[in-house]
Length: 200
Image (tube, rainbow, N blue to C red):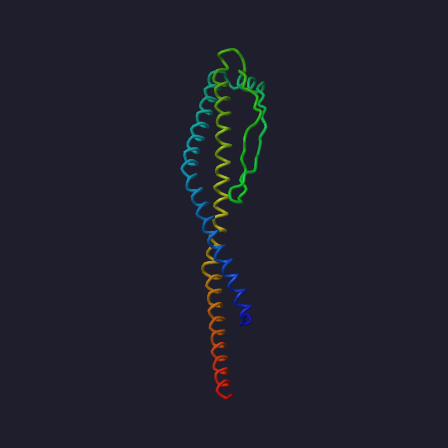
């Protein structure tokens, strides 16, 4: 145990103050993270449904393209298609948690594969797949953010509990013990001082 002196008491009180402030800050952080996660859950669920619908629509159009033009023709027309784009990943920070934001940049416009009616469903499928890609990137960004925030939330909860249930009660106990010891020493000192004064 620390030396039961006024210096030790002052140091303990400073540590106790820092731990209490730390607990308050971490509780605020925990609440902000939790609020952000809850605000994103419905949006992510809605976006997942949109992604599913978009991808299914794209495949339906691709199947129609196969049925309309045949496998060989679709293969030939799709090999002529060029898809050029650049993925841009930016790092964003949300209360100290780094979250990637993925965007498609400089995408070349989707030109028709041909000017004949036989490529209509293939062109529609290409446009639909490109739209699906945008939704998938948006969904992945949000899911990564939620996952990272959930990880940070777990760490924050552990820290809050450690401060609240272990460190702060321990500081209180030690402060009380030192204060009691100092009060006892002071009483003994006053008693001795009275005795000495009477003897004179």
